[in-house]
Image (cartoon, rainbow, N blue to C red):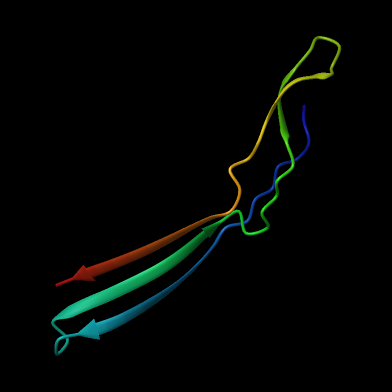
Length: 70
């Protein structure tokens, strides 16, 4: 068993009608791992319980999405 791993993600979006209400424009910003926890995570253990392998987390990730629907 390893330490707890708690991550927080967030998003915010905006919608607007365009061209005399004939189209909808949506834009959304997603943020993955808001707290940017960068501690190494144990992924494998030795028979005596000591850590055999660690992995570095990806870190904070921003994604911007824009869609236009008719």
